Length: 298
Image 1: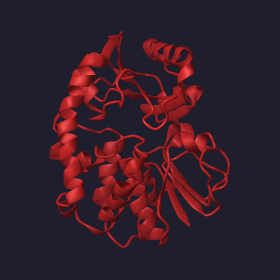
Image 2: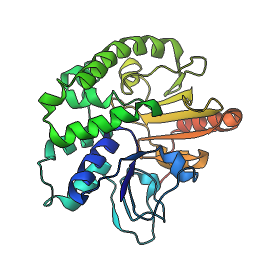
Image 3: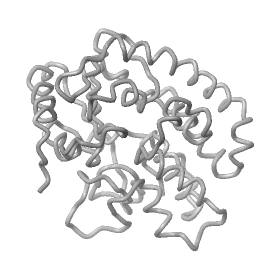
Image 4: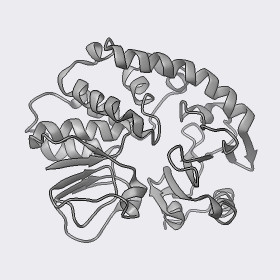
């Protein structure tokens, strides 16, 4: 049996929980949602998928994304919830060998962006939030670190984890990166109506940093579109869309919208990846839907 999940904080916590309760020994297979959607990863009949789109081949599936809901029977659990880790935790609550309630609460808080302005500006005040920022998109060279985090959260306290040399080094790096990221956001973001459009296509590699920071810098906007080239595939664009956590007036269901552009996600946040030659066709349509700000899930 093998865990298949995505390399974000929710995915890491999913792996921690599944290792504990299912006694799995194989290494995690870290993949992106688009790789599952497009059949680019070989799912096995004994795989446990978490925080990813459903595959009919897998043995079990756990998820919480609006755009991934299915109507066919399956083994596992699906619920619209703050995190996929929370879905797993609810299913196996009485069977864990350790108390993961604090860790799952952190996954709920971070994945649902239930943050204060102070936490966004100073994420170093919350160790879980800071660690979540050490997980940049799609850098497959970081697989050993993702595995390391899973092991740390399985066996160590958060206080001990923050003293781990690898984690401490990554956290220090994130704090420095966030300062540079703020400059990049100010230089490469423009506001059109209530939409903040961050275009990093001319930056190679694209900068990484606090994904919530843009909402504090452009409070007049209720949604952000971030455009960048995929760091692993030069001919592919990665688009992230998120409702502002400080100006909650965007009515568009982002996950449902991005299903039309080879992606998906939650009501308030989602992502898609597509060939760069489709940029002029896809990006204006995404932005136009957000500018219209019309509810699309009723």
